[in-house]
Picture: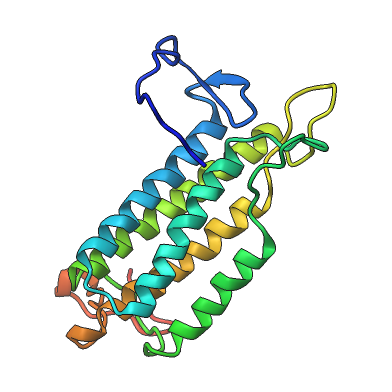
Length: 211
């Protein structure tokens, strides 16, 4: 149970913050950037759910994802430890399998994609396109944290690494959000399609050069 009795603590006024294992790190740490971006993605999805007017199954899917992103943030904020006294939340392969199943399910509801799509259409679709870009940034940040810390458990030589399933989860989530953004525009007849040159020139056909 989380019990927050005070919001400000002043402990970060010197530019550091606590990780999930109670160690402290710089607020510019790539690990912190990764879970901050995941938190931002969660907030954008929250706006989408609040304003999008989605069908119940889409709301249920996105609400599950929001809970997952909270757990993913906890995972990213906690270095991999060998035999921790209190095992932290970790992203599991089953969560990724659920995202892939969701992608397959919702993809059956939209037409085969034959052009690039503009973010827009309904408010819900626009917010989900926004969420897609933030999740992709979170994935890049998580990869940066992996490159900085590796994926090994902690030992006496240094800090523990990053759970590699976090980057996989974020990758699949960006795919799902893109698909759901398309589903959200079914109510207006489908996707808002890209027009080359803003409609000022024809879209090149296969094998045709723009030069």
